[in-house]
Amino acid sequence: ERISEDVSGFGELWSTQILTALLRMRSNQKLVEKFGSDSISNIVKALTTTSHIHHNYVFLDARRVITIDEDAIKDGAVVWHVSEEKFMEIFKEEEAKLGDARDSILCHFIITGYVAINTDGVAVTLKRDG
Image (tube, rainbow, N blue to C red; front, side, top):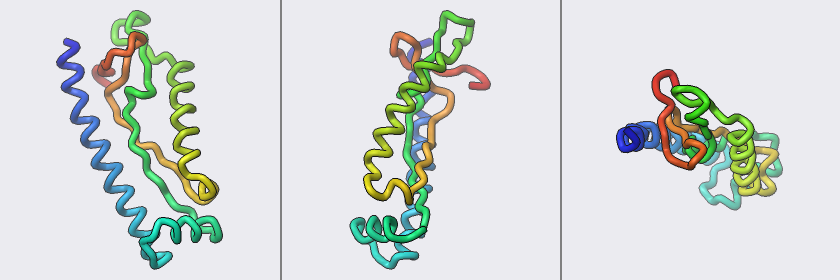
């Protein structure tokens, strides 16, 4: 069953990565159209000196965040305090990457569904309705 759960999560990973790439591409095209430059430093400078809000999309594998306790109930229960701590750590890492432009950028996490890890760190699926 563990192998089946591991393999069945790949579709979620791939589709979420594709969606994230598409959203980034569209958002970046809007930046280039607005500021007329494809230079990252020029765009960052423009973002920090204007009121324009840029949307940044970040792929997030739910297995890095969502932890379930399989012993709590038959299909597992989310361990919310652990999951929240993991997410806040990732959020702070992504916020630090934005540097001076963080006040002009909205960070959107595009997270996989259906997959998580258990309290032992083993990849699992959230079964139906997960």
